[in-house]
Length: 355
Image (tube, rainbow, N blue to C red; front, side, top):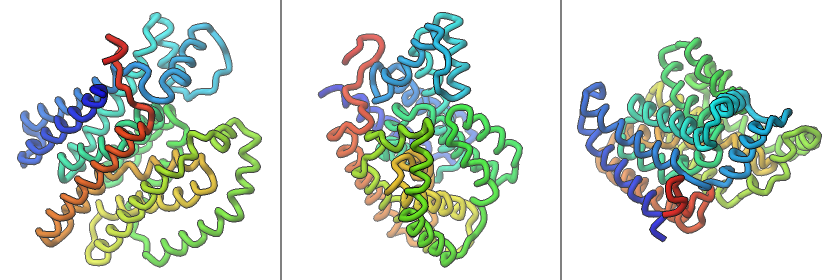
């Protein structure tokens, strides 16, 4: 249907912007910022004005807001969202404002991260949309805010600015409690670990999933996190498998590069994908971990362009670039347009409730 054209147009427009942005050597130039803003604005507006798009739209966000407005107490929700809702209720604001605010934050941090960290803007925009983070963010709304803040905070690891790192990820925790996991990573992500050690950790994790995970699960079933263990929505092995293999492939490629040279940025990305690898192994028996796995896997929109850049042979670069473009496009067509992952079709806006 024509409802999917919105996403296809968005993809090509942002990528085209990226192509032009890559021509600028100075990323502080007015033209670069102007193009970045257009990409941000398009990503933001499509997400902010959506109506009943995303599995959690009505059941989670709209419903919770109606409860807050009705004055119902003891609703389980994260602090930031609670206060945004209370403010909204005070001004009798439309429920849509929660999507406007979160879409702004997610895409603003994403575009800022691309401007600061990406070595290839067009590939970054391409993966950001085709790699389905953009669509995940219409579902795991709160978690996506925390994830994007985490990616943006990589710059503070490089600048060795613990304070700013803590503040940013602390705010992330207010949106989604899983962001607490990002805090200790400040001390780990930029450190080189021997490949052998990483493989030992993998082996231990595989053993642990057989022994420790059933034990943790039995404890979690008594808490309010039980829904994650029993909720079928998080148990989609299909999408996990592809993401998992992709994540492992990127990790291995980074490790191969790091054997030849030291590169701080490569170390950070390799370690993030390694975290993803460990969590994905746990996810095979703890569905809750799939959501946490996403936090490490979606970094590909920054890590893959960098991986291409540090390839030494130019002919490989073009081959890898072409391969990456096709691979992600197939993923997008299959996962979003055909399978309607994250339930983002049909695309409707608040203005006409349907296109």
